Length: 429
Figure (spheres, one colour):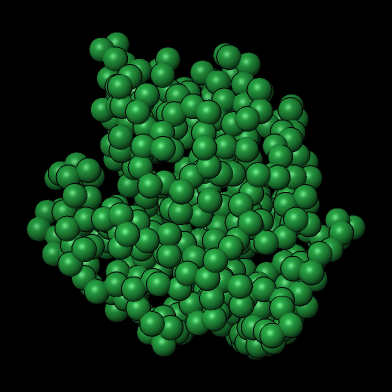
């Protein structure tokens, strides 16, 4: 372990394969792997819940785990054997205000106790979050000694997993969460802009946030999720997706692309190297599931999805023009939205370099520094070439914008408000 690495924070979206990535770290003897330390279940968890919460206890799609999800919390249960001391249910609600989140001091204390508990056992704590990405600037500034890695996936592939759980297994949880989180953040200016841009209809919120538990409110949103049209639910999902990736390109040490990991052995091999360089840990990513199948049943047709994605692209451009988001954020959004549109229209296989698919359809970001000297395979070679073509128009638009008087006027403000990124954050995306 590198002497300066005190913890690893994996900031993942729902259904992004973040559990698989976390499980790779968990296999290391020197790691104490905490699963979902902000999960609302931790407020009431007991030994029975802990033992029965496994990858096989529901239609998880997760890799087989040797231990229950929350096994590392077993020795931390409260005096009455129920709940994790220091945890508060408010921690489970992500925040998109850009301000210090409510209860930040208690959240920091809670996480530092988990870090200390891992260190006492001689382990490096590796956290897998699904409720932290909106608060990424706070996490980065509050835990500067930790390595922060964002785990991403294109929104349609992510949505397909959420939608399948509802349509095939009657589990609305992952379709409901975006409605709940957006509703509880609806007064934040950035959230209001997303709601307007994507025409998102939230459930009728009769109580102000905080008047009821998140679990109770989530139950209400589950009922709402099953009553709305799939395309309307996807609008909320995509709005939430945009907000969770708003700070990924500017505040993470690195971004782990699970779409690429499922396609490119060269990418996973390179990722093993830069993860080792960043963290001092050496997990193997050889267990990644290769992407197969061509499931496009997401509840709405490709033309409807294209319309929604175009609205999201227009929103992104407006946010860059106004200085509300960094150009790197828009590049990330644009790359993933383009990929999602192709997956929706042509299937999962069509986005990747094949003889029958024009090269310009593969639109992804692959930083040349990531693969410099690491070896190419057909996926990475095609991705890199396609990126130069597909994002050419975006670069031209940004160049025109950066030459404008408004951009020069606001550049100093952006520099003052954005933390300096380490060299590794540029090289590892």
